[in-house]
Image (cartoon, rainbow, N blue to C red):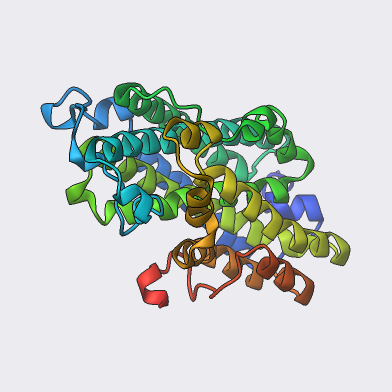
Amino acid sequence: MALLNMPRMTHMARMRGRSFPGQTEYEQTLHDLSEASVNRNFDPYIDIDWDAPELAIVPDDPRWVCNPRFDPIGRHPWYQAQPLEKQIEIGMWRQANVAKVGLQFESILIRGIMQYTAVQPNNSPEFRYATHEAKEECQHTLMFQEFVNRVGMDVPGGAWWFRRLSPIIPLAATTFPNIFYMGVLAGEEPIDHLQKQFLRSADTQHPAMTAVMQIHVAEEARHISFAHQLLEHKIPTRGPIPRFLLSLAMPLVMRILLGAIMVPPKQFWDTFDIPREVKKDIFWRSPESKAMRQEIFGDVRLLAERTNLMNPVARVLWRVLGIHGRTSRFRSEPSYAAQ
């Protein structure tokens, strides 16, 4: 009986043999995220009325034109000089492909999460929340594919190398979990940033796109929070050399996946006969696109500061990769507040 009355050691304390700063708050946060997943979740076939007349996708709908305020393609003079019909077609292809890339990324994430949960010990708070997240990501892949099917564009999604490496990337979740969760942020932060921008112009864009983005942004907030919390508490437990290597890995992972997520694949540029110089302007030569590239990772730079990964060498690497910039004062700080 005395043994039964002994306080249970938490997951991370058992793994390390000691407690760590912020342990109680960390485990409470994961519990709260798990409860939120139980009490507030979405089903794309219940919460989106795909057959509603207002969600019908028809040709020549100007609401598919790329928004010049938020979309780097939409603000380029070459795009604006095209006939309206071509602008619409480009916009439909663009949005369908963004959804397809999101599907492919979340498929990688689901497989990696299941790898990660398989090696968690009993009573692990990460096990429960990560499994909730995987379930939600499965719903997102259903939602994205339904959207792609209804738009009717046969889009490939990510670049060829991203698709080829898809079976391998999830293996990092058990071998290099910190780098895997950096990759989670590298994929989720750009998509979240772009979709929040689009939602600010929801009154002018197609409602099917708005419905998909609203669900995705709502649930991704929890997923992004989990990745931040996990890294913020796991990285400080590593030794000096692993932390230094992680400080270099972070900006590299961010920059590589930024290109995979944000830049349309070769088929896009070929299909619409877009000049190479225009592509270079849009990604990432123009001042506006450079500013967007830097703005996207403000929260990640905050994480790097909090975990002491923003050392002098890493800071230079962030700058060389073109993703340096102002660090967020707090997570999810609106970009307009950062100006």
